[in-house]
Amino acid sequence: MLAGLIFAIEDATDRPGTLAATLPFGGMTLLEYQVRLLAGAGAERIFVAVGRMTPALLAAVTRAGKREASVEVVRSAEEAAEKVDPASCILVMADGLVTSDPVIDRMASGTGEALLVTNDPESPAAIERLDMKDCWAGIARVSGSQLSEIATMPADYDFQSALLRVAVQAGAEHIALTAGQERSGHLVELNAQALASRSNDVLAALTERRTSWADRWVFTRIARMVLPELVTRNVPGWLLIGLAAVLGATGIGLTLYRWPGAGGGMVVSLLAVATLATAAAMAALRGEVKRADGLELAITGLFAAMTAAAGWSAWTDWTHWAPVAVALTAIGCQALVERSPTRHRRWWASPAAHLLILTPFALAGFTEAGLAILAAYSFSTLAAAVEGSREKA
Image 1 (cartoon, helix red, strand yellow):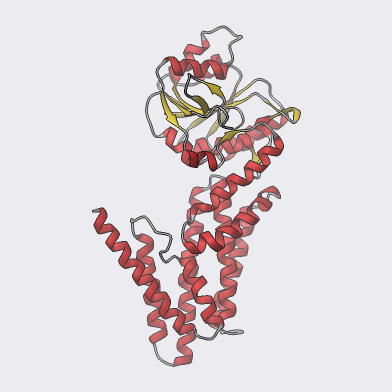
Image 2 (tube, rainbow, N blue to C red; image 1 turned 90 degrees about the vertical axis):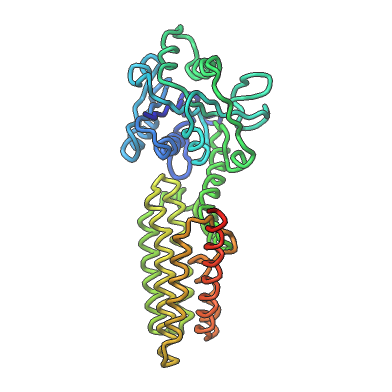
């Protein structure tokens, strides 16, 4: 069984009497964010090691326990050892640690004792020196039996440092923190203002879920700008989803009725895509992976509906079936691209890119030409995906 252990003992450096674990982070507290990461990595039980219990900490633990795995408070190594199976694997997170899903998943995927390390003692992720070369970077993978070993030590031992030393003595593997992981926001932070700034960095990293050129240069930039404000104001995810649904339905309706032309509906659909992309990033932040994936799928659905509506609108003008056939070709090829196991390249066609390309053509009154370009684009992407699959095989 995989379990988690979070330390929540240190006060914020700029807020005496306030535990760093209860500082705001990404629309929640830092502790809730850490619990989300551990639960996402598969931890079934999560323990929070505390020195004292505050009302804010109790509220954070209660909220986290309602949304994630079982969350319990422990006040000592002895209490933790009593609750953990000696055969369990435990992921340990340092007090005040900010990190991301890829880092946690990497540490959770191995077996045996391991320590995340950095060889830069000046790094914001460096907590405690392990040897002449490496410093601990805030995450450890230990066994339940090592908790029992610490429980036998004198009561004045520092729980976190003692656990670290036991892992070192057991010959724990050193796993290096990469430069990319550090740039994505991995560090230990006990300052409220600095933590708020890092919160924005992590939010920005979450908007990189979608990698096509249209997402990187348009929709991801929009999500990156508005997401910090949304989480700061605690805007619920359902509100964004509802807004996207209204915008999407409006865009489809305007396109079908060609008011004030096909272009008007396409512009509204772009607003719907931006809203869905932001909602997906917010869901990812809150650990709602299935919802985030569902919202990504909704963007694909919106593309299909808008393309079909544009084809129908053009067909009524041309009085023959060519625009509809071209639209269906674009939809079919893109559907196959989305199902391709090949890693998607940045230049490949995507649902968001299709809508972005079609909009100026629709505004200029050349919807049928835009649909033809979409069909060619999706077909060429499908050909590249098939070739990539063959090379991989």
